[in-house]
Length: 385
Ligand SMILES: Cc1cc2nc3c(=O)[nH]c(=O)nc-3n(C[C@H](O)[C@H](O)[C@H](O)COP(=O)(O)OP(=O)(O)OC[C@H]3O[C@@H](n4cnc5c(N)ncnc54)[C@H](O)[C@@H]3O)c2cc1C
Image (tube, rainbow, N blue to C red; front, side):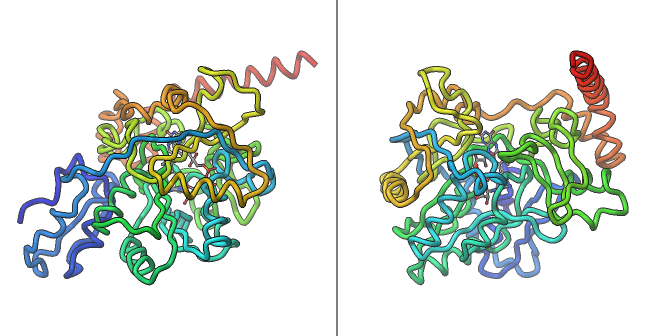
């Protein structure tokens, strides 16, 4: 049988697994932990549906943005665990409370793997808060979305652009009761790297970790922190953390992320959410913009949802901005990230020795220098008092 798509271009979106009528496709980890389809040839009847529905093989329906806003939730308590302005959380709460709807988003499972979940209660939206900088498992959630849509439920699906593309391709048609939100995305590391990092840090105590955070509207923003039921087990600033540094410097992203077609001014969902990087740089901004979100409205459906949403939700700061400002500030609106020159060395070492040795060999000088600088800064700060 023909391969579903080119190996390096596969985004691991799970569309093929969901669409296969004989359940003979499963996304499995390759030697780097990247998820790729594996076909059970004994069951496959060569119907070609997986190839037909693969979003890598078809041109998506591109949307040209029609509105751009700087937004954040002014309720500091509600926003604390959110990645930036807490807009994804507010959208989710609104969808459940005001539209009697269902939300699909990403939470940690018991092994701290990021998995898509179906959420129907406001209290469960808590689990979706915060960006998990790692590729999430969609599993069979597109099928569940389809069932919910066909039963007339309002559905909000939030994910990376390639996951939105996977969902849309799987569904094959637009539904009035579906709202899609893509997160502006720099790229996703494989879940095996994150497991390797947690093991490196906690060793035999790995089972203690119940939460992993990267962002937040508190002192843990841009920190890599591990938690046990609200108690911090480990905490390092991003530039002192091996995992976070490797993510931010694009050493450990999935191979397809370096040629991502969705890192573009054209979008594929109803609404795009991200960090409003560069807010106020192109045009004056007077608000107190710490960790603001950018909300880009790409379709009339997204525009309608947002106007209803802003009329019903209190405690939101919303200001109209020029899309150009968001595009200039956010690289992922313009082009895919560049493959770090250290990546090849990392992959060779990872295959040979695993996560711990590979990442420390590639990054130890950088982390060592940053640690020294941080200690020096602390010392100078102490002395000046
Ligand atoms: C892998 C990744 C890379 C990103 N890269 C960038 C970037 O380069 N530039 C930028 O401006 N913004 C980026 N973002 C988006 C940014 O980090 C915030 O997610 C976004 O601003 C929304 O913040 P919020 O406060 O509204 O979300 P919150 O209220 O914190 O809610 C978080 C939402 O993100 C979803 N989510 C969390 N982790 C994942 C995941 N692994 N896969 C799919 N969905 C997930 C949750 O389901 C939830 O809906 C990235 C996000 C992810 C997950």
